[in-house]
Length: 439
Image 1 (tube, rainbow, N blue to C red):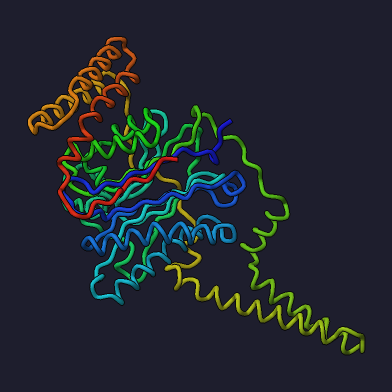
Image 2 (tube, rainbow, N blue to C red; image 1 turned 30 degrees about the vertical axis):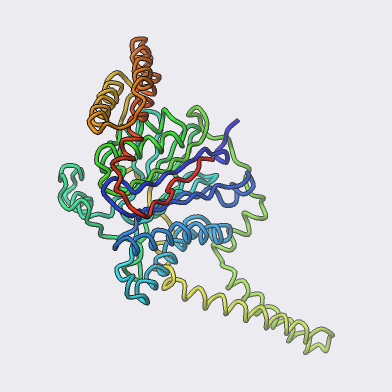
């Protein structure tokens, strides 16, 4: 049976049509095996850099490198919420230092949206206006709040952000790097069902692709094909920004995930003791007890008093050092115990979708428009093959199998969109390969 430790994933990031450099970045850190999944989980992250191409690229690259590494280093000892918070706040501090010490990097900043799939569910860490979605059944659920001016105004007025149109839509009010401290949204664990798909993306995708289209494409296609089609669709509609899509999917049929082996009683007790009593206080208490024992041994002139005193001193000093580190922890993380735990689970927006005749006709219309544009540019496309793909899609549509019909329409559309978007991309000397291979 499938389980969350078995994950299908892929990502693709593209410069878009109008930009000359890609300031987006993404990274994947799947667990190598079930044991690693149980202790650390899978990590996926998308970042959208800001502040000029050299600056934005540096910030986003640093975020997608540092956040997974810091989380994986600390999660086993600290738990997911604390490890996610540490990962984001330390990444923010590092990006801020670069911006402060290097004049050409002034204004260094990036969004950061990360997904952590673990045995107990999905955790999300988030700063900025990149997004994390969960696709389940016939709904696309946005699990992150856009830290943008328009979303903040909408929140204060109690309305849907879409009602404000394009009013300051791209003005970001929270990001990693510009300030020494940052407030991090941490939510979870969201329950996971077999068949759930998670989409992480930059606003270059959601500016051009609707919520229901995200759901249709993530549902119908394997992650690599879905990411490719989403990027092509965003570029076909203008590609006004860099475009990044990352999809992680749990194979299955929508049933609950199988139970995960619980840690041993000893490990649960150790975790509870460390969280409740704390190990520094334990060290101090043990040291105090050993000092009393050393005094008694000395008074009774029994052997071992000196050795016990050395052990007591070492334990007490270790406890004091731990307490000192705990006192520094709030300034390190940008928050203290009050914000260590996530709030109640939230779904900030839901888009219902259906894979039906209307969706098939929508993609057929896009296909026809793309062909007209490509023919007008005299692009060297095999139109006979495209006619064959369109005829196959028409045949499937007549059968009433709308899932297969939409998939066939998308295949026909992609056949034209890929060479058309490649032609429309700006001609630049710097042309890296922005795609990451599917696993």
